[in-house]
Length: 209
Image 1: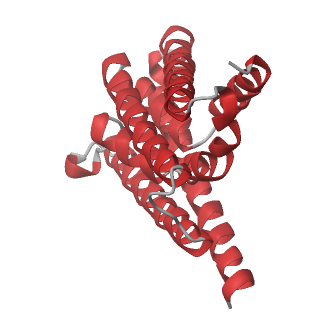
Image 2: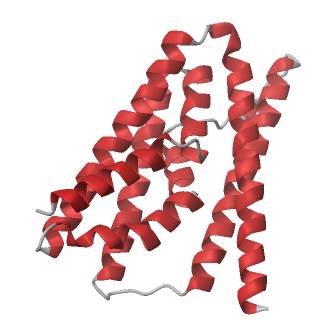
Image 3: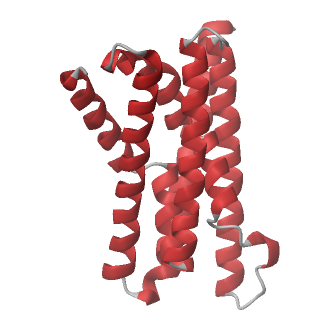
């Protein structure tokens, strides 16, 4: 096993996970507003989405499938649109709660399915697994062993980092601030979605217009 390459991969994964992004914002907002149980269900969803992205990256490396850069930019833009839609829905639900109204179907923050969809549509994760992940495939001489090793490292790191975020929110943030934290998380998600849309659109125009 190439321990230097593995160490570089672990460091890259930790930096990616610790850096605030759509998944961190969703998990922290869910933990603050809906409790640890729903937050961990969200983590399970994002982990499952990561497995799907890892599988796609493995298929690309094996030559079974190929994605053009244009497709990846369009996929990132679609993911950003979904993230933005979810952020707006959460903000509307928060506003309804503050006004003493029934939020109804607008309350869609967190949960396994929401975590899975956010993880699958997260532009940061898409680009990581498609463009950055293949650089570490030589961590062992065997392709299958490398994929398994890199996957286990990702899953363990992802669960650990997100669990620490959940514990931090539940242990150190007073309950009275839960709605404010959810609102901040939703606004951050909306800002990320806008950036993703603008970035993807500009790349498409620059490269293909």
